[in-house]
Length: 346
Image (cartoon, rainbow, N blue to C red):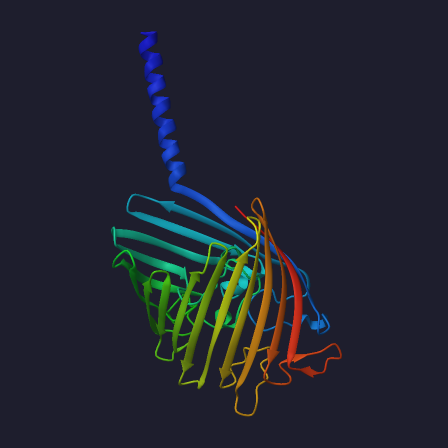
């Protein structure tokens, strides 16, 4: 009798342990924490003048964000809750301190080639992303900063073949959590999205009938030139006819791996705005409402276990005087800065 009881207990314990193992494999927690120090080289640090692109805009010691991502994966379904806290997180979610939701969605793998996703998900447009762990440069490009951040809606992803992919989406207008009159800043407006992919190259589309962003077309891709050298590419065009505003530009991201721990990368970007879009520096434009900027950002990336240290030099040169100011607070076309960021991922 004791043997039977003992065997039964062992069986139950083994079953419970196996079930716990399966559960642990399905539920995963990941995320990151980042902070930085930044100083302007061509101007005073007073008033924290920045290039005008998103994130890393403060001078001195500053916080990025704490990002915690919980994901649960079933046999055919799953869900992701991606929470972001801190200045970078608040800017990413539209400054709504009551939300803190970077992404929140559920998905259904209808078949091996089709997935449906409903909720809030980060944008499919552009080369760069909100999380600093997904970008090589710590500061962000103008193309990223003035395109969409996130979408709320329904999207369908199709794997057409080993090389081709297609995504179609029906959503609120970009970066709007709600669509009703009580909460939405653009009530009753929707947008359409699409993405066509081929061997890691993506052509992206967004359209909302000029309700907010208007129309944007974007190419994002890259190539492994060699084992050590990678070249990323991004180009975009955006237009809102009702507001008579828009932007266009292109960026190259050459990156060279010097060792397993250290990589050196450059972002060269040309960005132009029209209709007094107000993206570049303080947003001062010429009489026609047009302005442009060329930015070169040199970044080093050194990894120690889960910690990445990134020193970065950024040079901005605008077409218009007054986009920036110098050490004497006089109007200037240029701004240079240096920062060191620490990013820990888990």
